[in-house]
Image (tube, rainbow, N blue to C red; front, side, top):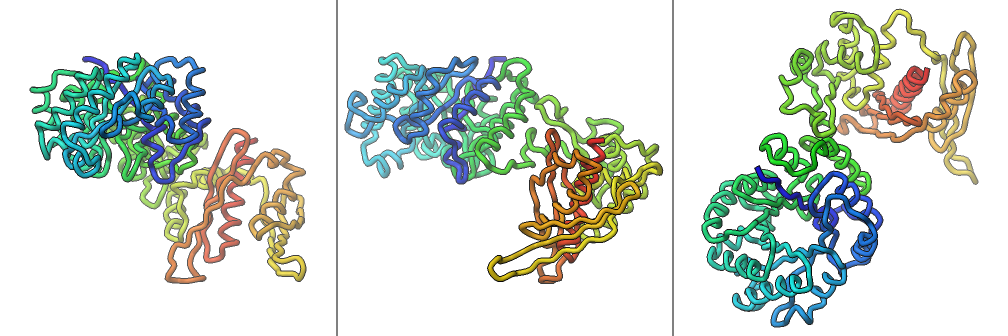
Length: 519
């Protein structure tokens, strides 16, 4: 079957998402990763609209792209004017990209009430804008904005706008569900009817306001679309665009349609997370295919079945998109969950029956407010501590924390820690910018002489959650600590009505786990 062109607009349409922005340097970095993935087109932005886009197109000219063509985006020329005198068209040419993508109006409502012009004049500016860019040596992709709304309002006129773009020389006309409200059966029926009057390559650009962007794109491909426009992770204005991670995976794994070079599908997971990292947004762990939880298994029955056959609760092998299967430990776990986690952390626990004690402890602690789903290092320590030959690297004797306000100095925190290490009792104290920081520093001082590797452990994140706000200041507090070393990140948990105790529990697990791994 013919390949499907993937047209990525993360750098342009994606940046219209609230809270998602990219610098010119970041756009270049992501464009290179998209090119490495193997997409056909990368829409860099709207030339002349902002400095970031101007910087992108200038720098993009000096890069040798392996698979992708860079496209500049803009609109048709202004009403009652010509493309030869239009600043937007001139900016597209000045970007010096091989491909230009322009959008025009399809919906009569937009022509008369937004552009404030006639239906005939709209057809003129579509055809002339495309023809002018073609005459200047550019390949042109035409985006028919609000196509499906326009087709519902006036099918003949909607088709006429596509025909105008085709007469002008557009190589592909793209049907846009700009408001994102079309249903899959509407997209299917519209394209079926359209194919009787338009015999030209067409693409699809869908938004997700009705939560149908991906399925609408796939429906269009089934009806002959040769190009899919969308964004990585589905970012975009309002509810976002079609998520290309899902589109690409479904096309290749479920529909047998090639859209990336051979073997490149495995890069999908990494690219998804690079986009979030560069844009400084929190990843959506529950995205299909590329979310961290996409192949995570929590229920005990599920995990038991997965240990016998991974196909039992997974629709594809996660490695095909660069992801991996994970087992989550919680109050819903069974013995298979604990056994899987032991194997993952290299803890020899013998048979399934030998993890009953840890499973019981997990359930009891979760009932008290602990949560082990995001604290796998705490689970690993529970498993290690149950081994008969396990010797903890240190034992707590006492700790004391003082928080004071001193005149002329302000808030002051000091901690004292007394621990036993290899039969020796060590007593240290430290100041910190808060009680948890003071405890952390004091514990490190006590252990550094015996375990110098602790110097490489760094607090990466500290999260506090109140479990039942109705109890006010007496509520159970859950503390999650993320710790980072040179090559590893691990998470631990504590829970108590006393936030210092909860923090100490998580801190001790973090240090003990780090030492067990380092040794």
